[in-house]
Image (cartoon, rainbow, N blue to C red; front, side, top):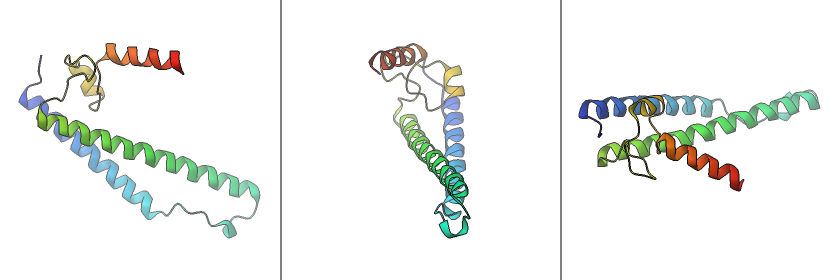
Length: 122
Protein backbone atom coordinates (compact mmCIF):
# COMPACT_ATOMS: atom_id res chain seq x y z
CA UNK A 1 0.00 0.00 0.00
CA UNK A 2 1.49 3.33 -1.08
CA UNK A 3 1.82 6.18 1.38
CA UNK A 4 -0.79 8.94 1.33
CA UNK A 5 0.10 12.53 0.50
CA UNK A 6 -0.38 13.70 4.09
CA UNK A 7 1.91 10.88 5.31
CA UNK A 8 4.56 11.87 2.79
CA UNK A 9 4.32 15.51 3.91
CA UNK A 10 4.69 14.42 7.54
CA UNK A 11 7.81 12.39 6.70
CA UNK A 12 9.27 15.21 4.59
CA UNK A 13 8.78 17.70 7.40
CA UNK A 14 10.30 15.36 10.00
CA UNK A 15 13.28 14.63 7.74
CA UNK A 16 13.88 18.33 7.05
CA UNK A 17 13.71 19.12 10.77
CA UNK A 18 16.19 16.35 11.58
CA UNK A 19 18.53 17.53 8.84
CA UNK A 20 18.40 21.11 10.15
CA UNK A 21 19.07 19.88 13.70
CA UNK A 22 22.09 17.84 12.60
CA UNK A 23 23.53 20.64 10.46
CA UNK A 24 23.09 23.07 13.36
CA UNK A 25 24.89 20.63 15.68
CA UNK A 26 27.69 20.10 13.15
CA UNK A 27 28.07 23.87 12.84
CA UNK A 28 28.37 24.20 16.63
CA UNK A 29 31.03 21.49 16.87
CA UNK A 30 32.93 23.01 13.96
CA UNK A 31 33.11 26.28 15.90
CA UNK A 32 34.53 24.42 18.91
CA UNK A 33 37.68 23.68 16.86
CA UNK A 34 38.69 20.06 17.39
CA UNK A 35 42.44 20.63 17.24
CA UNK A 36 44.60 19.59 20.16
CA UNK A 37 46.71 22.11 21.97
CA UNK A 38 49.46 19.83 23.29
CA UNK A 39 51.21 22.61 25.18
CA UNK A 40 48.08 23.07 27.33
CA UNK A 41 48.12 19.41 28.41
CA UNK A 42 50.47 18.74 31.32
CA UNK A 43 51.09 15.00 30.86
CA UNK A 44 50.61 11.96 28.63
CA UNK A 45 47.38 10.90 30.36
CA UNK A 46 45.76 14.26 29.66
CA UNK A 47 46.99 14.15 26.08
CA UNK A 48 45.66 10.60 25.58
CA UNK A 49 42.30 11.56 27.07
CA UNK A 50 42.09 14.62 24.84
CA UNK A 51 42.98 12.56 21.75
CA UNK A 52 40.30 10.01 22.65
CA UNK A 53 37.70 12.76 23.03
CA UNK A 54 38.73 14.24 19.69
CA UNK A 55 38.52 10.84 18.00
CA UNK A 56 35.04 10.22 19.40
CA UNK A 57 33.89 13.67 18.29
CA UNK A 58 35.15 13.04 14.77
CA UNK A 59 33.37 9.67 14.60
CA UNK A 60 30.13 11.26 15.75
CA UNK A 61 30.48 14.01 13.15
CA UNK A 62 31.11 11.41 10.42
CA UNK A 63 27.98 9.48 11.43
CA UNK A 64 25.96 12.67 11.43
CA UNK A 65 27.23 13.59 7.96
CA UNK A 66 26.29 10.13 6.73
CA UNK A 67 22.82 10.54 8.25
CA UNK A 68 22.41 13.89 6.46
CA UNK A 69 23.18 12.13 3.16
CA UNK A 70 20.61 9.43 3.94
CA UNK A 71 18.06 12.12 4.82
CA UNK A 72 18.72 13.89 1.52
CA UNK A 73 18.27 10.58 -0.29
CA UNK A 74 14.96 9.97 1.52
CA UNK A 75 13.76 13.48 0.60
CA UNK A 76 14.69 12.76 -3.02
CA UNK A 77 12.66 9.57 -2.88
CA UNK A 78 9.67 11.52 -1.58
CA UNK A 79 10.01 13.84 -4.58
CA UNK A 80 10.28 11.04 -7.14
CA UNK A 81 7.60 8.84 -5.56
CA UNK A 82 9.79 5.95 -4.42
CA UNK A 83 9.86 6.76 -0.69
CA UNK A 84 8.70 3.83 1.43
CA UNK A 85 9.56 1.16 -1.12
CA UNK A 86 12.15 -1.48 -0.28
CA UNK A 87 15.23 -1.17 -2.47
CA UNK A 88 15.61 -4.95 -2.65
CA UNK A 89 12.12 -6.40 -3.13
CA UNK A 90 10.35 -3.16 -4.13
CA UNK A 91 7.51 -3.92 -1.69
CA UNK A 92 6.19 -1.16 0.60
CA UNK A 93 8.10 -0.71 3.86
CA UNK A 94 5.81 -0.96 6.89
CA UNK A 95 4.68 2.48 8.13
CA UNK A 96 5.77 1.64 11.69
CA UNK A 97 9.30 0.98 10.45
CA UNK A 98 9.34 4.28 8.57
CA UNK A 99 8.05 6.10 11.64
CA UNK A 100 10.87 4.59 13.70
CA UNK A 101 13.49 5.12 11.00
CA UNK A 102 12.39 7.39 8.16
CA UNK A 103 15.67 6.81 6.29
CA UNK A 104 15.03 3.05 6.10
CA UNK A 105 15.86 1.73 2.64
CA UNK A 106 14.66 -1.84 3.11
CA UNK A 107 11.74 -3.68 4.63
CA UNK A 108 12.41 -5.68 7.78
CA UNK A 109 12.59 -9.00 5.93
CA UNK A 110 15.18 -7.79 3.41
CA UNK A 111 17.19 -5.96 6.08
CA UNK A 112 17.34 -9.13 8.18
CA UNK A 113 18.49 -11.11 5.13
CA UNK A 114 21.19 -8.51 4.43
CA UNK A 115 22.42 -8.67 8.03
CA UNK A 116 22.54 -12.48 7.93
CA UNK A 117 24.57 -12.33 4.70
CA UNK A 118 26.89 -9.75 6.23
CA UNK A 119 27.53 -12.02 9.22
CA UNK A 120 28.18 -15.02 6.99
CA UNK A 121 30.73 -13.18 4.85
CA UNK A 122 32.28 -11.08 7.63
